[in-house]
Image (cartoon, rainbow, N blue to C red):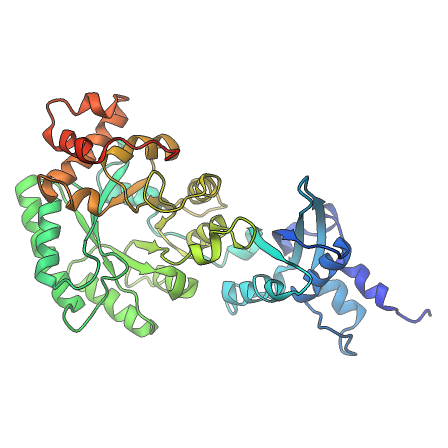
Amino acid sequence: MRKLLERDFKEQFWSSIESIDLDKHIILVYSLKFENVSPIKVAEEICVENSTGTWTPVSYETLDIRKEHGAKTIGLYSTHSGDYVIMVAVNSQDYDPEKGGLSALLADVAGNVYEIKMIEKIKLLDIFFPRSWLSAFRGPKYGIEGVREMTNTLDYRRPLIGAIVKPNIGLDPRTISVIAYEVALGGVDFIKDDEGLVETSYCSIEDKVSYVEEALDKACEETGKRAFYVYNITADKHEQVVRMAELVKSLGGKHLMISGTYSGFGVVRMLAEDESINLPIFVHTAGKEAFTRLRDYGISAAVFSKIWRIVGADEVLTSAIAGKFHVDLTEAKRQVIYLRSKLYNFKPSFPVIAAGLHPGSIKAACDFTGNDILIFSGGGILGHPMGATAGAKAMLQAVMAWMENIDPLEFSKGKPELANAIELWGVRRLEE
């Protein structure tokens, strides 16, 4: 028998998409930038770091192990700019979804590849999961239809509107409840904590929920419209997250929020799979741009959105479409698609847009996203010259204008709330 050579092992890093069992492999797509090195060598190095290898052969890695468990390049494409796109398949059985789960998978496939010296830029563009692997996850409990049932918008499927409490730090529970009451009078669907409004020594979760729910009950009695508060229960310790979630539910709260980027996928999955809590979960994604913003490095925002849906987020903050922050419209479109399109048996999640939005942003934003969208506004409601209640009404009037396909400036005639907002902030176009 011929002695096995290094090239015999390297050959196991290559295959085609038609020759692998797609129900047993997770497919990864990366963009690559490198110079003065063979694309074949780069591809093999990625496969080494994404699976069995190390920088030098070891006797315990047999050809059978490499053949069964080694990552495989199933596509390597040169672009007109001279960069490359690579598709890599990894054996899904190496990452038990119930034991190691997504944390173990991502530590491998979005880990050492970013440190390979010969690669200048690399971005994880997409991950395709087999149905068998994702069957371990439950996905959103409520999803779009469940949230629409909560907000009584199943039949008239308008964009949903929420207010963000501002300032997003330093407020006591009574002040937050006053803000919630004023905004709820304007007819919004949600009021939410921002990422900075966490439990503190001067703002306990018990007091906040108690005061806010009392205020929302009062507003509902006066208007007949129920608004829901989204409580931020972000914390380092999972037991603290569970404690706050249970308190929110026991005190009458109906919705939770987690700042997911730094809390991690696992805490959202834990909440979503806890039958005793059973509240919808909004994932705030502050910090994601540290990973996603560069076009040629990091991890695609669409990958994050897909994973948030898989682990159980009912609503996911995407991009500031027609807002104040950086937005890549291609990535924004992909995020919306990945949250709403069919994904095996998972319920669709509500895409959320926010950051610098106001009534004059509604048409441009909704033209881009369609009606199954949740729009949050902080300053665009609370900064209204006629007050927070008028700001909420102006946002809903802008939504009605869009639903009826009427220019917002024309629709604002006889509606001082919308007219004042447009006079102050204007009507925003998407290209701005």
